Length: 237
Ligand SMILES: Nc1ncnc2c1ncn2[C@@H]1O[C@H](COP(=O)(O)OP(=O)(O)OP(=O)(O)O)[C@@H](O)[C@H]1O
Ligand SMILES: [Mg+2]
Image (cartoon, rainbow, N blue to C red; front, side, top):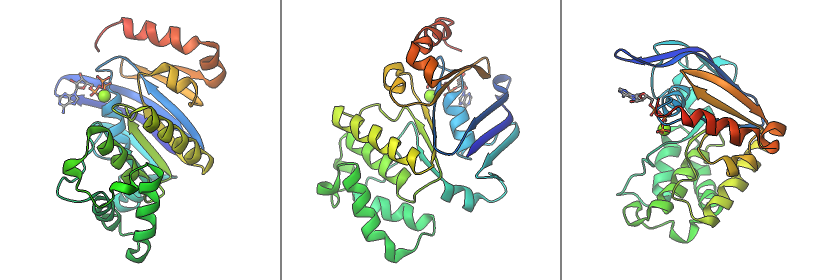
């Protein structure tokens, strides 16, 4: 479970988030949508404890996210806007580095690493350096890194971008598996069609808070399509 309570964030005089509340339960996939500049990436970074809110609280797995950063890091997997892979390390070494950063047992790595690279379709390139990887291959590696420590919460910022059709299918399958494992999944995306097939709920961020929510039946009825279009028409936030 992940929850933000009364989160506000301003950059100088620009108010981006204002008393925002959001909650993603166990085994739930929520799409976070909204116009360019609405604050989706900012919120995701706050939930991942990569950015401090100006005020408010983030709760992960029942505890305050800031109180125990090591525990929080182990509970959360993040796929950010950039892939943040290390060029000089191979695919497997990238995962090993992240594994050790999270103080996971060293002896368990080899199996977990190879299995994770297999899941994202990269096992045949596991000993190649990330520097020679294409954009989509780096994205697959970033997804592997977000998942390797079996997080309870997954935070993904436009994760389908630069994936080919097979990559999109792989990620869709992975997210459904993670949901059935009880993981809480929050995905920032502009892709209404993709999310219609996947999300249990879509929350629209506008005006600094969650302005509207669509449950899965409303999404399937097509209400999200119209609602999201209307929110985008307001222009860049
Ligand atoms: N480090 C920063 N310093 C100043 N302003 C920032 C900073 N980071 C974000 N902002 C501002 O916060 C607002 C929200 O940005 P954010 O990247 O969260 O939007 P977004 O909803 O992810 O948009 P997009 O759909 O384009 O990815 C924008 O007005 C942006 O200029
Ligand atoms: Mg963004």
